[in-house]
Length: 435
Image (tube, rainbow, N blue to C red; front, top):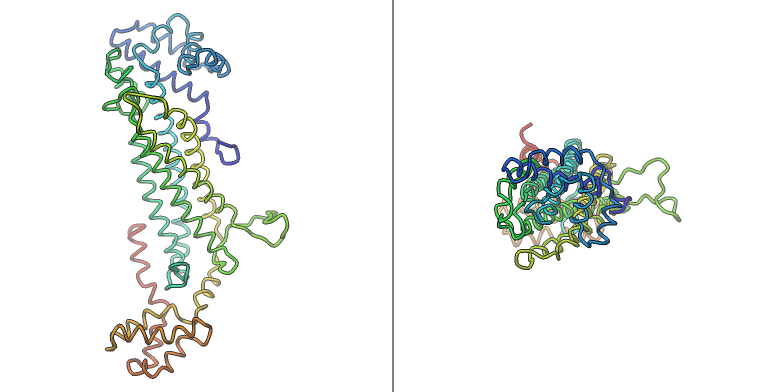
């Protein structure tokens, strides 16, 4: 995590103080359950809460102990004993380090997921508002980057809305996938800790008991979680690249908001660059980059090794913090996006009517020409226009072979822009619902 791309709410989830607070809660809830089962004195469980519930853990002290013990959980437990006193001997009864580490990690990921879901909601709100604003704003659709047929700018935004609706659904599923707890002991057999302890801790921490763990919670859950983040990052990049293309000087159908006093270039004062969407593109690459180590963490040795640990300490915070920042940036870009309908119309007209070529092709087939002949007739008149030699409508009207099938009025009828937009309402209802 670096401050430049970090928002405080998400970052706080990964701060050492937060982590130790969660560790304590796991241990204290486990002590409660053991006390109820008669495994430890009830007064001891109460003392553990009373002494440490509101404590601020000394991170420097824990680090100092870890430098000697070379073990992070033991370092924490040693410091906790300094706070709690003699009753600390009842902490961590029958538990193993991964019970604390994995349950904590999943608590952090569920909290991160809640923030990310709220972030996606911001993106969806901005997309919906702008989609309806430009529902019937005509613009050119492109395939292979080349002018194809008309669409509306609202449809472009509706497409992104549908995509991020799926992103939200995936995030909700990923949150459920990762929200499990393991308090099952050294190799997951519950030999030293009753399964009811796990059930109690899971409920207290807002998690579900892991059906079967070894010494770790199975990492396929985490792989799915971070893969979901990677897919969302790709969706962000798709929208960002669309905006970057639309902002090109030769296109300029939309551009990022350029604030008062903003500078686009250190050398060229005229520049207005798509720096925010370029930034989103770069951040998306980073989030996707963390998917591979998450996938590779699935294959651990036997009941446990710690090859996953070092990777998760980095990509857990980094992936969630980075995606959180990028989603908020994307929501802002869409919300303030400057749209130029006049340039969209100018680009629609740029190819001299060629965007209506399919309508002419189909009309000729309806009038009796074979599809092969129709294609040849249309392409014969389209290629000169492509080279800048006249406009499509005029050339079609002059083509004797075309006139065998269609009158001037029938040809002109195929150049109606509104024809391409007749089902926009239907698409919007599919995406946004009847309302």
